[in-house]
Amino acid sequence: RDRVEDIVAFAFDVVAAAGILEPLGSQELGCAHGALEFLVLVGALGDPRVPDGRHARDILLGTRFELDLYINYRPVKLLHDRLSPLVGRGRKDIDFVVFRENTEGVYVGVGGRVKAGTEDEIAIQEEVNTWKGVHRIQRHAFEYAAARGLRLCMADKSNAMPQGHALWQRVFKDLSAQYPTVKATHLYIDALAMFLVKDPGQFQVVVTNNLFGDIVTDI
Image (cartoon, rainbow, N blue to C red; front, side, top):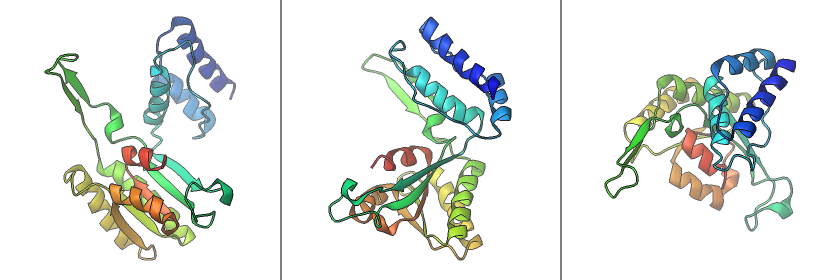
């Protein structure tokens, strides 16, 4: 634990003193991994001495990728009826969890820009889906739902993204057969966003990819 405190202080000092991003490397993160035994505590990211915020992005994404933190567990629970943003909805209606795949998708940084800053600029951002990544996050969501007797919804955009999200469909169908006690349904991500506002009480466990999980949990 003392070593982890040194790592955090080192990273902050580099950023603050040099005014540039110096993300944690594999060696430092490897030490953190062993010292914390899979526990990662992250406080607020951002400092006025680093104006563009790149360090926050690279520390956050770097930690996820280097430590292979593939489960982004996001509970959504209304703490009091008076805090509800939806008319006529209370604590009984807003109580579910979202499992967001955390190491793949569009956040892996595959892509680039050509002729940047011109009228001919081309920008490409690739989405990466692997069987390993898709299977392990969906399997975890199914195991979570099965252990608690909860319903599960998998969300993708396979109608418009038929290559990468066909893999999500394949894994979903395979796991649905392996967990017959779980009532599993599928929604396209835009439909999920609509139903989260119209009728959030129907959801108990949601599993989706990196980008979609990032967005829908902000609703």
